[in-house]
Length: 318
Image (cartoon, rainbow, N blue to C red):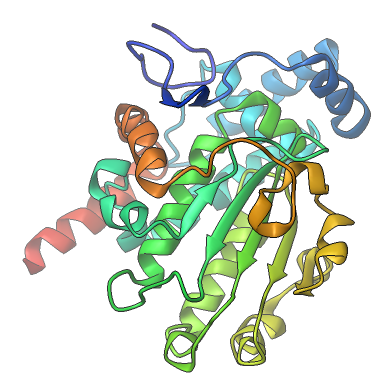
């Protein structure tokens, strides 16, 4: 089966049954609400879209060493939407996205769900099965008492986030509305805080600010103890104003959180009223595994010659 937003063929649309609820990727075309937001916020009209795709295709042909699916309009759109259909900006984003993969080769080399089972089994990373009131995907990271830092590293957490956001990029509705991230830091210990290093902080900030082809609309820190100030001190100096303004600290103040993510869109554990089941990490893993071939296809693009050189170097060291 051919799904327009995917690079690979799939036997069936990826989904997992959870009781009466079906967990799935939403790969269909935009809803009427999505189309309205795309038009008002992203300048998306059929005419602008067609012209931007052609301009972006022309620009990409001139980028030396970059291998991308030039004949795939839907692939182009996933980069044009976060850039409001300005082709030059989208071309620059694509280059940064792939340059980041070369720079952090160890994180991205053959990155696919089947090789990252541990992060999902630890159950500290999840996406809400529902969207928020503005149509945004909600990613939850529990890096406090739920996180067994001796069993799962922050590098694995990063890889898990990449896998989730790559999946989110396939969804037209998420391309338009973007995503919000909740960091639940309840129970963070000093030993866990020491796991955060300046190089890790720089990689995360560079990734979020320059290399994520998705609209990150808010980062919400909740239940953070005072020790978290030590962690945030690593990130603060390298944050640009735009991203800094989207990081909001709520502590245990749920009313503060509800101003950004509606109570009706949050699970009971955060005082919300969502009736959908809590999606366990292994259930997300089951869903992502069905897209393993898609990640393999994603890995075929980029600055392929540079990636191959890195791969050969790594193999020689073995």
